[in-house]
Image (cartoon, rainbow, N blue to C red; front, side, top):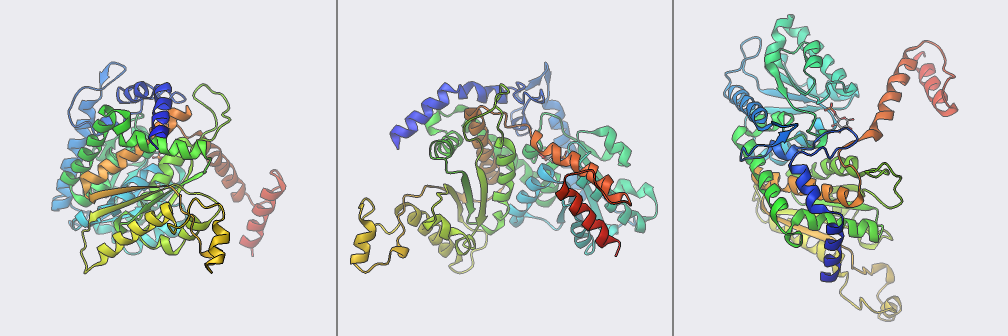
Amino acid sequence: MTETLEKLIKLAEECDLHNSICAMFKGKKINNTEHRAVLHTALRNRTNIAIDINGINIMPKIQSVLNKMKFFCENLISGTWKGFTGENITNIVNIGIGGSDLGPYMVTEALKFYKNHLHIHFISNIDGTHITEILKELNPKNTLFLIASKTFTTQETLTNAYSARDWFLKSAKNEKYLSQHFIALSSNIEAVKKFGIDSNNIFELWDWVGGRYSLWSCIGLSIALSIGFNNFEQLLNGAYAMDQHFLNQPFKKNIPVILGLISIWYNNFFEFETESILVYDQYMHLFSAYFQQVNMESNGKSIDRNGKLINYQTGPIVWGGYGTNSQHAFYQLMHQGTKLVPCDFIAPTITHNPVSDHHQKLLANFFAQTQALAFGELLENNDKNIFKNYLKRKIFPFKILKGNRPSNSILVREINPYSLGALIAMYEHKIFIQGVILNINSFDQWGVELGKRLSKELFASLKKDIMIKSYDSSTNGLINCYKTWQNK
Ligand SMILES: O=P(O)(O)OC[C@H]1O[C@H](O)[C@H](O)[C@@H](O)[C@@H]1O
């Protein structure tokens, strides 16, 4: 292992990893296809040391949005901010999707133990069922909407935002009340104003914050409302501590670097294809879903930074689960399947809910699984005749677990805002390492554009009152089936 690690570190050095890390932190335009800097780390720069883009220090505007968030949270949580009838706001609905939903949603769930009296809800899917089911429990008088969209052009978010607006105005009857119930988190100020959101209610973010890296910006307002601004700052502090570790530790002691290299090792040298994140903490049930987006949207590329087609494996397929539930669902394949799944096990040593011996049992399961994956049955691992010998000893081959299946164990003392901030930043940087070594731009996502364009075109076709012949036979068939059934 030492030899492998040394070789991997050499690979990182050959890929000029150190300079790439510095370039990101210094605000160089490393997102080369969009000519943008990548500065989510500036959002949690707790020192106020200047960070320049085009010669302008961006720290003052970051601080000013943080101040505005703090003031808003205090007003909202204390009940100083009122709804249109004078009632206190008790329900916050974040409307967003992708990075404007998954990050804040995951963190508010992960830190539920720290939450105050506000109820936080998330609407993302364009499926009308999502908004219907959430709104049917709510009352417009005490509900406030956060419309979270960096671009403020995303179809799902705008469709949901307009429906929320209609729902609200049905009760409030007067658009002047929108200013007490609608807040925008966006970089597209013009589009926000066009929607009708009061300019005082706009929290700004900037093009150098990638959507999937944006929970540290105003996109995290739902988090700050849920756990209070001080706790939100703790989240930033934890991420900052991990940033410093990442920047300053030598590669062989650098956690994100080592995690990134291990991932390259299994993905590119063994071609294992997938990685799993398994969290032994109920509050963290969305953690793997969140990092599925961050990793797969960042590193799911097949063109390198020089515009050339890649002939090696890039980003792995990331998936996962939580708690012992996953053990009863898909671990069978991980122990005995023909595919090898490198995985990260994460657990807090201290639980927020010490119910009898639940937590010890939970951790015993964590340790049992990593042991079973690594060592199998601890019998004759190197024996070529393993199956024969087992039969001789009347052990059935289908009971054999050969072990030697890789996993990382990540023990966190306690999941709190600070440690969660550090954990998220750790994974963000791991993904960055993978991107540098794979020589791809981890900060664009052109692959999602075609689907968006096509859906707009197809939406127009669905609205037309005629049968469609203009697409491929499969699409024509599906659309026409829809039309036929609609008209019955
Ligand atoms: O925040 P928005 O501009 O609404 O974008 C929401 C999401 O949609 C895009 O399609 C990207 O794939 C995501 O990275 C992004 O977070």
